[in-house]
Length: 216
Image 1 (cartoon, one colour):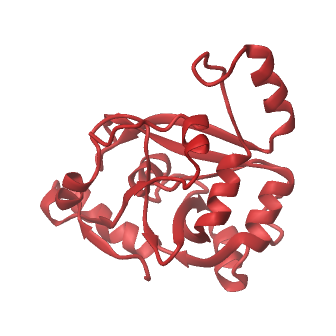
Image 2: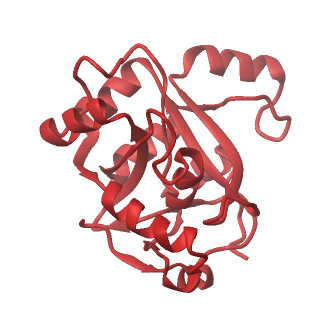
């Protein structure tokens, strides 16, 4: 596994405890996002280093998540049906920021749009959905900080699945190993990917997607 890891308890000192932040593993101009799939999709993706095959549909929306523990909450540490395999997708940061720039919020918020009409127009034309949801600790409990997830469809999903991915890693074995520490309440032994706050280079984009300005 190319992803660098660190003790979960150590990671807490490097991450904000509240606010809306993109938390992600980053290395050499690349950023990692995750998705969990059933084995047939994962097998094809790892073998061909792209999304495709008869089990995967480009006609549906697919949600990617840069935060490892948010992914673990959503897939139940790779135990939920059709989410038994966790894949890590390495992208150029420029590609990730292109996805962010094409995102429309899934729900209307007065703080993000001039009006509900403006939001509806963007929602109708954009092929990326953005949601801020409560982040979770390793045991699945909500924490104050909020995590981002991005839903891709249409051309944006096809571009992601066929062109933007630089590497696909199956990290399921790592997930299963770390789940043993969670199940045993051995939090002091738990390893997680080394993740830090990700800040897009464009400050206008940071404001548009609702990033918190403080890292406290």
